[in-house]
Image (cartoon, rainbow, N blue to C red):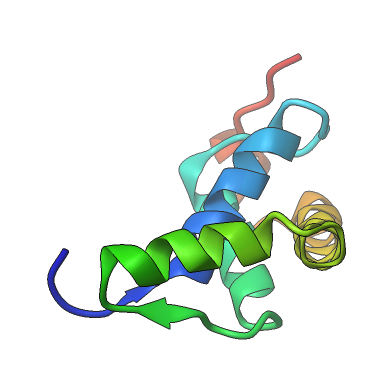
Length: 96
């Protein structure tokens, strides 16, 4: 592992994937990135530069309180983007 990595980004994208199929909004990549952007701008960054740092972040992110905070923020983002997608209805991708 070389350079800096914001582990919160990985954590948020994983949480979006977990919640993705339970939501009713558009499933396009643009909406997914809008959800991630909204959530990441409201959560503290967690930069690491080593495998050890990565493992420590994963452990801390798995605590009940941290997971609840991340889930809540991602869920708020999902609801906001569902109501206000950043594209036309013709571009939307819905699956159920």
